[in-house]
Length: 523
Image 1 (cartoon, one colour):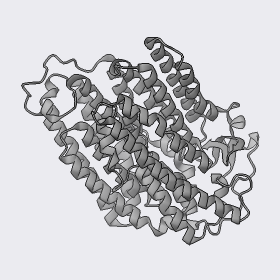
Image 2 (cartoon, rainbow, N blue to C red):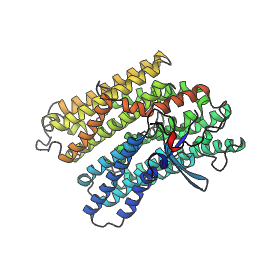
Image 3 (cartoon, rainbow, N blue to C red):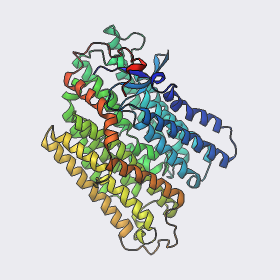
Image 4 (cartoon, one colour):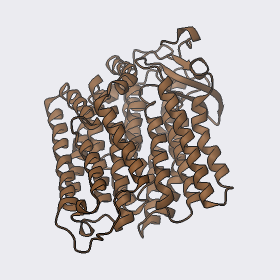
């Protein structure tokens, strides 16, 4: 896994990743001084749209089918944290996904957020900046920093704009649990840095990802670091049985906002494919069976508990747990199809999970909490909203023509290459997803008409339709033309498989190989 770097100056001529990182911060600082609520909203929306434009430019200018780190920027080090950012086929797609979801949340926010819109947008911009930082960080301490900073806006989003009576308790619980996980991650990172220093290969950047790839890690240390990182990322994902915080946060927190990112941006599983598997390949191969087993357990448990939920938000919380199980099963197939399927599902489920939470928000503004007792026969009164829920849900099931089908197809292929039982489990996950989604759809939208239902409730509004149409377009784009997405991740996925097959012990040559000159950038 010999990685080269292509700098932002070579590829695009300006530091696009730094712009993506600091643009939301500039707007949130400026927004703090805007007193008029309507002007604050428009100004914040402009910032979110500009971020999306730069993220799309990044995706368009990204060179597919290569494993190199692209748009790389390096800066100085401060307190052991080295400013080293870049993207490859594993991380680049999550940047525009984050920016797109932020714009859609902003579109939803003006009519739905009833109090203090200005500070809500400030918190959302801060949340977006930390998420972008996580996906572009190539120094593990920098990654950890953004991982922790994400908790600041998260706390305020849950405690201030949550809808449940126990939202402050849920916010505090979320922060405490995540801080515990972050301390385990910090411990693991320090162990890797100490190993690099003892090998004499660390230099001034002992936590740099590309440097750490060149350092052999003893098997005993690999196992220790593997489980420290596993616990930290399993809590964040969440992965069964470390999921207990999630239903509470999704039920008590904002209907739309942070919830969109918790179910839409798979930060925990990203950490596995970004750092754990490439840095600890021997441990990943040794313990793949445990990761696959936990994935299957989470998939089955989440689906079964989702089947008995009457509140849509709680159902989506357990559905997300089930989806995390599928992704873990796919990633720890440790082959090309498994990595591609896992990444494609992370993108697709990001869109689907976000879409279903948007629908939950649309229902909340009409009915209050989306309980089945308040629903029943809604399809007669809000047919377009009903159709929106159906299409997004079918994408989650894996209907042919949607992104879910292609992702699940690759997941099954990757699992089958390891053992038929893993493929059977992946298929069972699809069956159970169909069971809980179609049951809820039948009860809430096609069942007997609830006499208490407001028969004059409006169908989907113009702004809501724009959100639904955008997500629907993404679902069918991925489903009907997955080629561009697979080509984007192809080079990095093959390099990762090579790394897993060869292991880290034998690879001791510097991976921060000579940076390509401008004429050497492949086109």
